[in-house]
Length: 205
Image 1 (cartoon, one colour):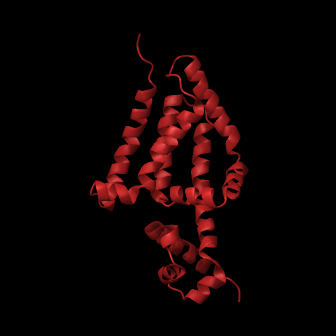
Image 2 (cartoon, one colour):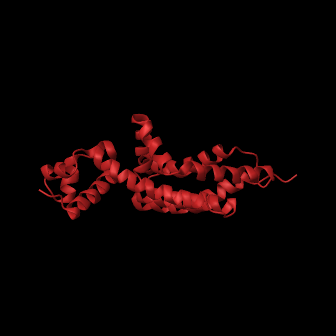
């Protein structure tokens, strides 16, 4: 029996939808089979495990995110524009792939070598070093407050990621439905860069 590409893609699309709705731990192979409109035996013929499917979807999303980040950190735009673009693009990708932060954390704890090798293989280190040098140059020239480049980058990533990683808690505490949460994210895309840039602004003497 030869594998049909259209069926394989239908399974991947179904798995993505189920993972977004239920997360890695909550999704079942039967859920994915039902969403794809096939039986479980056929699903197992194409993909032996839920982990295999998740790996495919994770790589798809992570590569989209990494290409975005590399394009921004590697270009020659001013630092303030770069920070704004990073916040906007990061949250755009996470809005389309909300399961990504939790999966990365899961992978770090379960198999750190695999995810480290994945990021290394995408040539991220040189691009980050270039970004770090730009941040340090801005500090040295007193264009921004003194801050170590890794601290600033982690602040940006954390502030972008947390609403998605904690979305069930946020939606419960703030009484937000999915539509309202999406509006909150759209507002955050504008407010977060403003907040970060204001925090970096040097004090007037």
